[in-house]
Length: 371
Image (cartoon, rainbow, N blue to C red; front, side):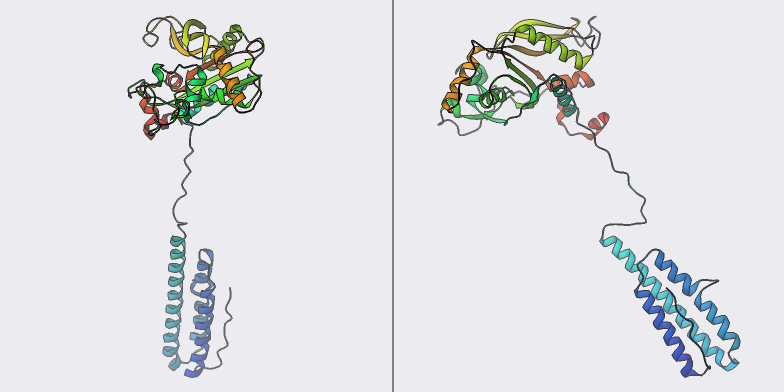
């Protein structure tokens, strides 16, 4: 960016008009090329700079040599040129600011550090549980939350009059009354339907862990929610025994809560497993000594499990036959175990959360504690 100093041959009005017209044209041409920032400052210094500015150099050169009668006319033209350059500078600054605002960028503002997100405690807990079983060779299975009665109940050995089918326990989809019972739609009450879907698609051996959201017609309180999360597991192969189930869950509990945790099994009942058991772990808060959180028993009930009922394998074989597939789950050759645990309860234990509703409130004041 430069402007040559024009030659001033004499100081009459016509010559002064010619020279200053050229200077004004040069300044206007340079102003049109400005891109803001550093170019604006360079333009200002070139024309108005105190030491090297072009106007200062011209004034020093011409006013000293000008005859006395020409100095007033020369001074008027210098002032007009200076005012024009200052006006060009201001217009260029305004255009630069308007362009920044139009693009949503104000380069004069301080930078803003992006906020780093964090996993929700439920997502984090579910990933930890799934990771434990993946390291034992289990694959992850997923399925729909809107299920049919067949996958959610019938194939899992729930009889037609089972209380779990009542609307007091299960959220059903409206307008299903005319459909056969097995085809009626509902919100899945557990992730067990994915076990059935997986056995229909795959032949044994099968090792599967199933995380997901489930729905039940429960009133919300500090420990219950109509929406919650489960992780279930299924292992099917030859010569699978209850000892395999106990060893698997004991290892998983130690991986989740520490090597000092102990497990114990109590007889229970579930329609889809036989025999069935409830699993307790030694209290992680008092180390089994007894405290308020374990009701001074030293143990916390955490999940249910059992050996897959042969009736479930038979339902899978029958359904595979209906679909034109080979019935490969022969109860004379194979066996399996299944288990299921509530992710919400484990998350509440691990993070000391007293109200399940906090996990679903979306309150950042609560969630930021886990960042």
